Amino acid sequence: MSNLTEYFNRKEQPRTTFKYGDRVFGRTNKVPFIGTVQREIDSLVMIHSDLPVMMEGMISNIVTVKKSDITRLTEME
Image 1 (cartoon, rainbow, N blue to C red):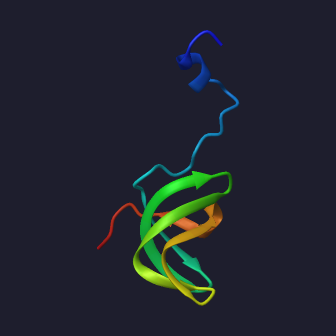
Image 2 (cartoon, rainbow, N blue to C red):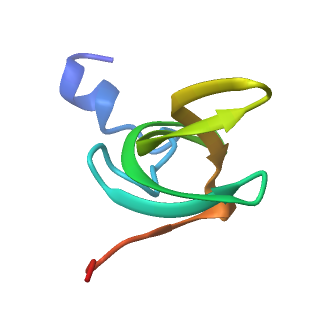
């Protein structure tokens, strides 16, 4: 590759569904949460939830879920 522009514009790069800062709603272990997308890796999305969530006996603000388990919030009332 001759320059970095060609490297980052190559077609085999995976396209993301969610961008950093998108507001999302989802459920993990039947517990609903609302949060902000931090990172998307393959089929998983790392979310910083607004309220702490208890997962596997630990309380955490960071939740990692599948893309199919969350929906993007467009308007919150």
